[in-house]
Length: 381
Image (cartoon, rainbow, N blue to C red; front, side, top):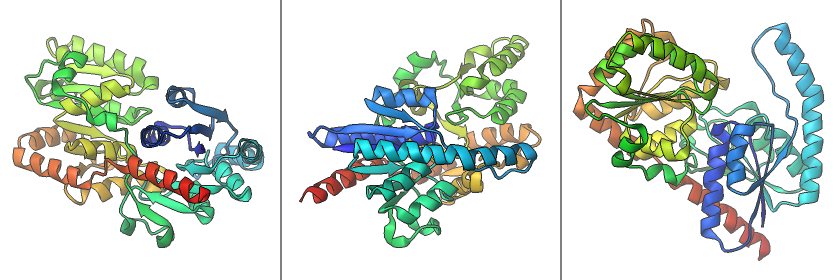
């Protein structure tokens, strides 16, 4: 069996694919060959290579909605050069590799693959990770056999109801296997204060980092912090926090800075955390829900179709999280006071934990894997 995946290239697209690949390997003894087509992203595609997924890099055109001559020029290049080239690359790759099906997770890198697959009469499945789908998935949905959606169908007004299956966002089951004891060793935790996990998404979030830095002494006087700042932000964050902690002796033992939390580290961080603060990408939300942790979500305001804002409120409306939009984060002390207030309300935290668990769908990857394998059996019969 041959399965071809396609996606945008960030962690939000790659990690769900990894979860599905692992479940397929568990569920079948048949030899399965996995392929991935997408734009170049060495960091996240290296994770796919570890799962024995063969990678094909293509050109992919991105449509930018923000104003300016630079944006217009890039759109012209992408629409009239990169997208056609990416489509041809995808077409010939699919033609010669003859996959049994194509599974797309959205992002601009998936559209040429989905279109080429459809023209070659290959079954195309779609996963929509967010409440508000991007342009690529809105177009791809027109020629997809099934659309797996992460959020409840009633939240998804963009797709035909008869095509949708609500399964959740596929998460790696291994993230549920952490323990507080192992976390103490992994992060050298002191453990005499509540632990806050700060997540900036798979690529980091500089404005979130800046906010935390402004109130870092106040946070560390009350909490112990594990902070994923993003690889590209590490040097700046490390420099600033060293200066601050140098002026506040004794607090440095409560601050644990990481550019990126690998799977082994992330599962221990989830296990240790009493509260999680981060952005509102679908992957982060469903991981937080699966580990049953209360959270404060600060959605990225510039996300396409405001999908992070919509994700955050769709998740928070059952009481699993508190949403604070960036416009409401001034002054920075507001976040600190919110953290202190929330951590002083154990009953509220328990309600949030329960709501998170009720929202979670930790078997999403298994459900999708079974559907893919079942589709294969139907094709053979």
